Length: 247
Image (cartoon, rainbow, N blue to C red; front, top):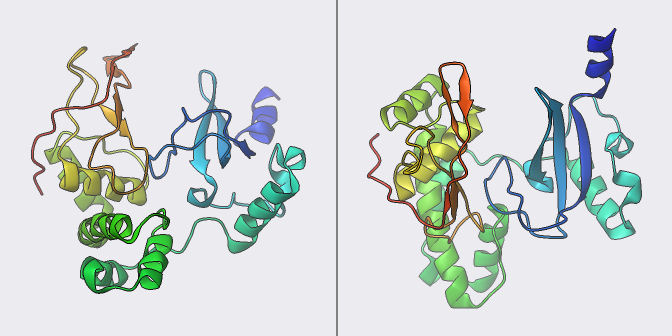
């Protein structure tokens, strides 16, 4: 009946260029630039919701045999179609870096690296590899710090990660990679505080890039549940007071 019909439709996956730069990637939390190809996972709860991800932050949907299964694919231009096909054939998300690889990255010395080597490492981390040598060195220092933190948390179990997040009053839901990212962010920039307006929700943050943002981004309150009642909150800010992280 109706339930079966819903199962046929949800989740469904849509692809296309971002209409604005207001959306953020559900996976890496960075902004999705206007015009950038993104993939949306459409689900139905109380109402239809779409979670957007950068193309290479999105895993290839299970059971999807071709790009034709992506709503909106046919409307893409030739260049965008080629990008989507390359992503699809590669299996989706880039290879996850091992703890050993991350530890190696954490020991990089940007001052001793050639420009070509710097670009290679930055690209491996899905980071902008353009700009001057000095700018790339600054980006690499941020990559180093991030890799060092990632190597610590990636080696932990899901219960271990949740325990750390709980100790710091942070959200504990999501995949292991999302838990790792939350811990890395906290380690580097401090705990995300409770909303100063409603006092109930833990702030979330969207950064303009994966690294090099210095913890500065767009903060907002997602609201919170008070017993069975969801309390909405429209608080936004460009900075937040973040306390030290406790492992």
